[in-house]
Length: 151
Image 1 (cartoon, rainbow, N blue to C red):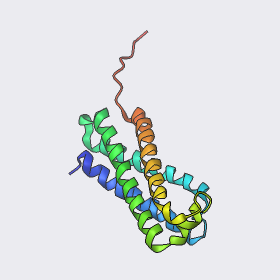
Image 2 (image 1 turned 120 degrees about the vertical axis):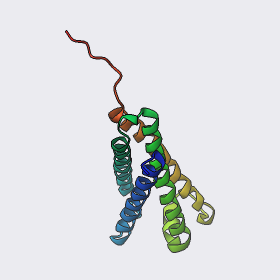
Image 3 (image 1 turned 60 degrees about the vertical axis):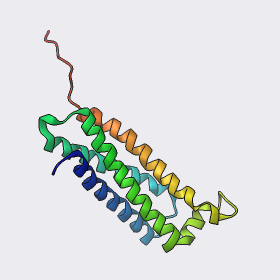
């Protein structure tokens, strides 16, 4: 069961767990409201995508091609993004509503109407970084069709 879908689901869930763990670690030490620490989310996402594509390439052997590798990367990132966004929605709307209000206080006068924008931002950031990182990593993993010339 090492299809592109199963590999991407496995690595997407692992990446989402790492993202949630990192957020909870920041919450534990009181740094979860500092937006600069979100930059490390990109590192976590990049590592998860890289490992997912690498694993899929190793299990598919000669059957590996650009399309399937690209699909694996995209699905891995999409799973991770949607799971993390779902966690953040539950966290912001049910567990720590003050966190949402603290983030939105500079954007809106009435923070009760702007909470959905935070989830939208998480989704856009995750999906955009997934696309860019997958395109980047596939340059590493693709097979070259270039024939080398001998001098």
